Length: 399
Image (cartoon, rainbow, N blue to C red; front, side, top):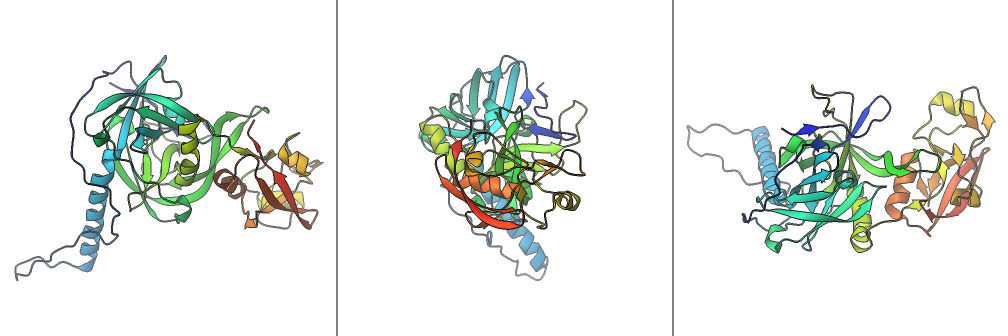
């Protein structure tokens, strides 16, 4: 029987990366089973045509039922086309075995998953929905976004690449679908919505201060994802990958201590995937841009009053790292004691970057991560003692 274990804890919540299924061993065998799958085509949002019976004894179909059946047909069609491109990833490490999900990126045999799925793997296999199983090797890792690329050598007929969508086009409330292998239940499909965009989580890269750098541009969803879903695709209704499921936040565990879905999940945006993965395939790594500031996601009204900030939005600079791009550009962190313990006034307030408004720190971080590289110049608009100014900053790579 497979056992599952939690990987990460965040404050009072359990932030569980989903590659958490463990067992003492499992068979590494190979199968040559093959199934025929239709070519990938864009889904029409109207769904299949439905024929209404014409005889007098037929059940009367109302528009709401027709809409429901259209939606049902759309989801069935999507699953049948997309599932052949979703894989299960089995790993062995010195501490046991693990389970995660992934998807086919191209016809060259590149599989995309989470870094934490393969982090400690000494051996791994990729299992296809057709039943075909193959050993794989990790050729690229990104500890900042939690991405990894696995290379497999399989016949092309087993490879069904999934197209990337534009995650910037996602809207709150939009329907999304997750497909993966929660608790080793392969090929599981769940449905939800985009709950929020531009969320941040801690990355796996530790800073010199002892904390961890942030990962940005994450999608929050209520689609049910659980341990084993990590690395699997989050899809729109066109069957395009708009995110890679990474983590859940929950206060709930089952009788075995495994984290359970609470309706708050996080996925790496497809635009981050599209920016990072080509470098992982080519170089094995990706360098993220670095500014060198510390901020917090938002400030309460009481905190803003204590800081003497009139604006209700913007990212307040708590501190600036010495010898960083921000330091060289002259940005300032807090230095004056306030009535709130640990909160220092006098820091700059970021209100825009490259003329894009910054409401929260996550807006700033997500823009930098998704659009900029080390060596690029950005223009940060700040408020300092009531005066607005624009500061040019040349980005470094994360140390």
